[in-house]
Length: 245
Image (cartoon, rainbow, N blue to C red; front, side):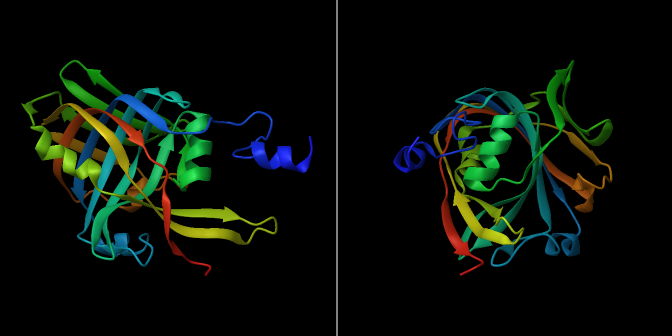
């Protein structure tokens, strides 16, 4: 293999057997349970990187089922998204993500800078309740419950939030361990197809864990909950701020 062949084939690791294929990445019947809660503003200030601005002391805790995703397969994900503003534009900063499938962990971290870690999340219906759980190893870290499809929501009530940009802090180390890439990345979801949305009563419990510190953003009050099913495309991102420039 000569150098030109290396350059032509080098889009992901390992070179001869990449962990994920090139995009675009399409998701069919992607299912969300999003619980919005009020938290400690001082705790938010410790984790949201400038130049992002905190809008309010609010966190969105998300469980996401992805049964059919191009190149990534069938997996479940959970984590925290913080509403922020960047240069006057409102969006969501992804603070933490935990999932159970290697290709989207590798691709999410390498391409966009999603803060993905390996764990065991689950989103399922238990009789009359939509239940989300996160186990890190053998330890239960998060439990969310929501009344199953209590009140239907119109498309215009939920889709604008999915159309807002997302923000990520992408860090790639140099071979000496120093940061070679440290960038703020913006991305968007596209080709959205609404399939249904519902609200209902909800509860969220977070437990302290050294390596999955979701409880560092404590639940002070649950504000709302939404259950959404949609098809969408996860578009590639753009660099909007370079911390090393």
